[in-house]
Length: 182
Length: 189
Image: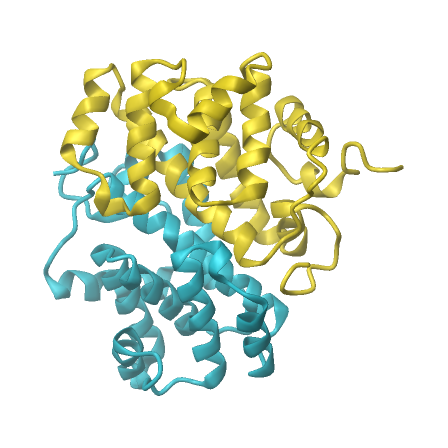
């Protein structure tokens, strides 16, 4: 049971933003612009960064739902999602993506963990300043979402099919604030 | 020096926001509602939670910036702000705020660190569900802001006399794009 009285049976962050839509509105807007707006990083790559950080924060709800969204977005190459969550080094992803995930992992620990060398490495692999900025902010944002979801003990489904459905919706519709009728 | 070329010489989060105004918009709007909503927790209490979490995250720019804002709301009582940073259990604040700071400290470590007992303790001191919600989200949001500011290596002014000036700007005009679009307070014209 959640720590506060949120709508029953609604999973994760959806139940929290329905409790307090005034803040929920901007949380969803932030997710939408970071994960869906026009960017040289693919939507799949951005969802993968989100799932990776959520996994490191042990947030089962966010990790499972964003991994599911990433699998949908990668389509035929969906195997890279689980490879990355298991081990960045051996995953079949670009060196640039590995260097960005390295930065995201440092941000997850603490902002001050990121060093100029981490950023220089990503630049050497071809990452732009905008891509590095967005990686840092996605990792920081999920360090917030994960704490919000688990800090209030929101409902975390166990059934993988539930997440597959969520992932489909997230991949096709993006982040839309749920209404009270949902 | 910031790790990437942010194309401006603004301090802290202002420089990251000016680099990417599209994300600055929801980031500012979230801060405005979380830190300046007058229902439930006071503005001073909200800023103290932000200051405490930023201090735990070792974010120099954020804990000094929000500490100064809290100080203005507390009519200049810097001692309370310092006490909250160092040992809030000894600070001259309500039992309710102490219980909420305890929850915020858990959130700073991990969402999973918050226990039902921590929440019950807060409820026993009179905290409403909304107060608890806002405390958890303020603490979580500062775990984001702090990582954003330090993860990009943004510039944190060492001239401490500049912090109260920026704090007054926030107290008077709130959070929004003006903090990176308008001339910086105290800067040469």
